[in-house]
Each structure stands twice: as structure tokens, then as C-alpha cells.
Image (cartoon, rainbow, N blue to C red; front, side, top):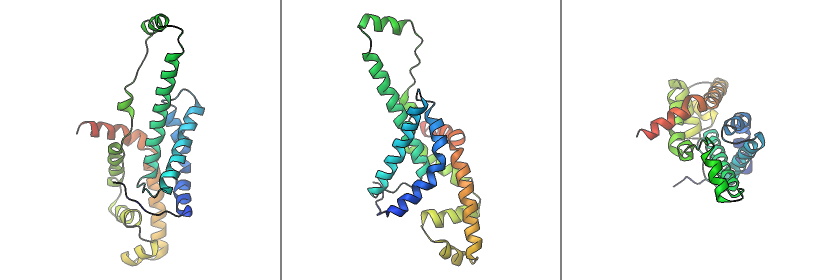
Length: 197
């Protein structure tokens, strides 16, 4: 059962703003599955809207960027399946449709294999966290998992607030790079790992 919290509009806005820089990569990712840039853009907009609605309901999204990849891709796949279904209805009669199918080399990917599920996201998130240094992991756990403030973390670690703030900024930049590269480095590997269980 998903964890439920009460987000303020400001907290939701911070989460959404932290993901806005990912929009271009998400569109490029969805374009592998959609026929037009506009369709890919619609899928990404759908994912951002769904994220805001989910957060408004109080559902915790532990990995917002990975969540956006999952929802955008699943929407792109749904859209293409719907388009294929509608195109099938466009044929004038079954004889003509059968003739077109027989005379074309239609590629029909197994969309179920392409969907990014929660298992893949968790695997990718673990790979990202495992790639952090011990200091980065400690800061990640305290700030993102235990939701401690930077001042409290500074006191715990016996460091100045400025030093911890700088570490946190470097950690955010490092995580952003890892997440932006997740598609190439982790999602495919994560999908294979989950399938081999």
C-alpha cells in the first residue's frame, strides 16, 4: 500500500520544478514509441499532470523522475495501441485489411515487454544509490529518506551548515546526471534483471 502524506501546494511545486529540466529527455524517450513530436509532448504533459494529481491525493512518489519516465512511456504505449486499433477500423472491408496485412512487414512489438514497471524503477533507483560514495549515501539517506533538514544533518555530522549545503548541492547535481542517464544505463539493464528473477 502506498505511503500517504499531506503535501502543501508549495511542496508539490518544488517537486514538479525539480523535474522540469527532464522534459526534453522525456519527450525524446517517448518519441521512440509515438509517431509525432506532438504525441510525445502530450505523453509527457500527461505524466506531469498525473504526478500533480497523485501528490495532491497525498501519495508519496519516492523517485519522481523515474516515475515520470514510467508514466510517460506507458502513456506513449497506450496512445500507439489506441492508434493501431483505430487504424484497423479504417479499412473498408476485411478482405482489403487481410491483403494489406499479408503484404506488409508489420512490426508489432510486445508492448508488455516495453512497459517500465515498478520493479524496473526500484532496480534502477538501487543501482543509482549503490553508485554513490559512502558520504553521498549517508547524506542521501538522511535528507531524502529520513527527511532531515540540512541544519540537523550538519549538527549530526559535526560539520558547518555551509559545508553540508555544498555537499547537498553536489549530490543533487550528481543524482540529476545519473537519473538523466538512467534510460541508457539502467532501464534496459533493470528490465533484464527483473525479467531474470
